[in-house]
Amino acid sequence: MKLKSRLLTAFLIMTALPIFLITIAVGTIARYQANSIEQTYDVKSDTIKLISNPLQILSRLTRGVYNEIVITAIQSPEKFEDETYIEYLNNELKGKYSYLVLRKGDKYIYNGDKENLDNIKSYFPKYGEYTTDMEGGIYIDSKNPFLLKQQDFHFTDKTEGSIFVVTDVNTLVPQIKSSAIQMACSLVFVVILTAGVLIIWIYRSILRPLNTLHAATDAMKEGNLDYSIEGDPEDEIGQLCVDFEEMRIRLKELIEVRHKYEEETKELISNISHDLKTPITAIKGYAEGIIDGVADTAEKRTKYIKTIYTKANDMSVLVDELSFYSKIDFNAMPYTFTSINLHDYFSDCIDELTLDLEVKNIEIVYNNETDAGLKVSADAEQLKRVINNIIGNSVKYIGNRKGLIKIQIEDMNEYVKISIKDNGQGIPSKDLPFIFDRFYRADASRNSTKGGTGLGLAIAKKIIQDHTGTIWADSEEGKGTTIHFTLKKCKEGTDHEQNINY
Ligand code: ATP
Ligand code: MG
Picture (tube, helix red, strand yellow):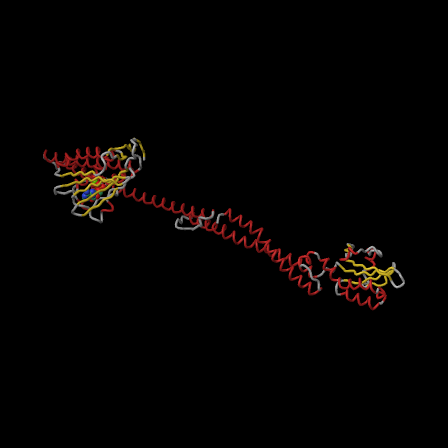
């Protein structure tokens, strides 16, 4: 999940979950307390009303007794002069946090709660001031708040009398108190629970991948490039882990390439020194022969000097090839890509080669299956170098048999394939995968008198790769070798010339 959606969800959970849980908690507590109130005080009402309006409960508590007082006041007010009846009413009220007060004229002749009356009696309404609207009682917010119900009547001697039911608000119904505490506790619990759930969720989704990333960077700092991590690409931090992993793999590859390059450079230097040492030793030997007078005849001296010349020539070829190879290997060779007509180009090529090859008793067969107007994008001069290197090898390794070189050109959608086949000695299968490596020469070639540096095919491969083509070889020992390479066709209508400095 994306971090944005995660935060939005967290926000929704943070607001909605507590509301939902608190509603459930309050509902349950309210219902439980309402039942309890109903059982204890015999008061039935809507649960929320009961909890939210405790005065109503207090009022209802005394409703039964008060109703009896009202009926008695209408039907037989003389009963209020009977002390046992008053005592009986007061006792009924006692269990309901209430007591009875009786006033005759201005005098209070009965007080159910001896201690409190003096503090509150000044708030009692006068005879006739308590209206029927106040049926539920009146709330008096004095120092000792109380709920008051009053019923007026006349004593038998016609004195105005009032009977009061006083309910002490200070001793709020304990259930209401505990309800408030329970609700506050449930609120705190819900908030802690929601926060806890969110913290765990956020920890898992943010901190855990960050810790993984931290461990991975530490490992990388210490040079361990094999420490792999995984991430969920669906969220931003997960994506960061995936990117980090890609970076690690890339870095590892770069370091491996660098190591390989360093190894190759070492090998290159040792190959060069070896290849230069052989002709230099020969030159030194023959020169010493002349100086020391070993070559004592004119004929011998001519032979020695010719050999020195040939070896110096070999060295010059080697140095030329090396410098050319290092140029293309470092991509310092500028290519001039032009649109070349394949038919014209190869016809010229074959004409040039036929003359040379006839002398060496090699027949050349050319078969071009592509359309006459087909053009490829290539550097004509470098392409010639590739062809010469391949045909040069065929000539070199054809042996004493009657040579045959076949050049075949085929159309392959975006590319054309050029195959140069010979009937020479072939390449052993153990050497075949390496013939395009620089300085690689099969044992047979190395041991033969035929010169060579082992750079010819490496150069051809690099040139073809720079032309976005591929090059490969098929060979059967004793039967012959075929070198194939591809060249990209020119898109129709483009007759371009471009210099690309690789
Ligand atoms: P250079 O071309 O630098 O003078 P080279 O011919 O030995 O030297 P490459 O052209 O790179 O080097 O060829 C590499 C090796 O592949 C050769 O030494 C030879 O063993 C083998 N090889 C290449 N072409 C042929 C072929 N047509 N027939 C047999 N062996 C071949
Ligand atoms: Mg060669």
